[in-house]
Image (cartoon, rainbow, N blue to C red; front, side, top):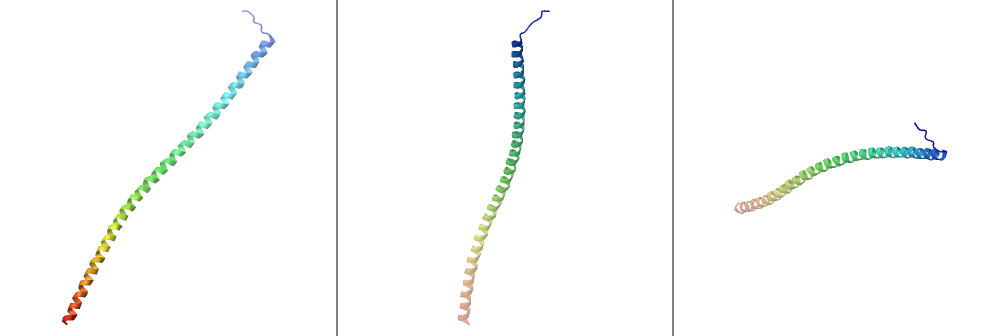
Length: 109
């Protein structure tokens, strides 16, 4: 084996490069940890947002059902109102006929 000799300047330059590499690795690990933490936070927010969307969609479906029911009730109420008006007109016609008959009976009597 041959002995390799390095000068003090070369050794210090190599040592400096190793220290820089160690610092670089340290910063990269910190950046990776921060990125993993940020990813986890965003993932949790996404899960929460999806839950909120599902809740909103469910509520929207319920409201649509309520609107449909109210429209049906409104249509039925409109039909009932039309029927009531028809019965009132019929009652008025009958009342007039009864009054005429009473007037005719009073004339005869």
